[in-house]
Length: 139
Figure 1: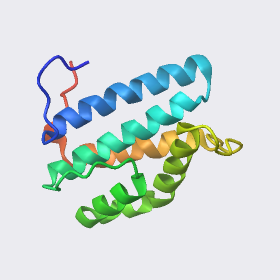
Figure 2: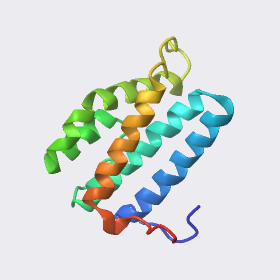
Figure 3: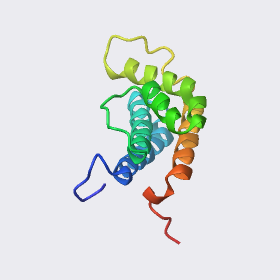
């Protein structure tokens, strides 16, 4: 956990929050399998990575959980993000289905492994685009 004053205008803070959630998602998935909390954490992690990328590109922060909207915004800066549109739609739908009771949970998380793989690919794309905002690995 970050123990400092954070800023919603600092991509590094967004990425640190995102990384922590992603690690938690992976620990949970390993010990419990696919859970609603894991889906929510995966969505929140990707959301924070995308917001960090966008803020790093000068985007004015919009408070939204809609990954489709965020991926479309990111595609304006780097076209390669457009290939993640189906992923963004599916993960956002899974997120909202599990977020409040009353939704059909039948298919939530059915493609979890692919969603998790796509999340890694988005993170790699962002790291390649804005490496200066990521912590350097300890050697």
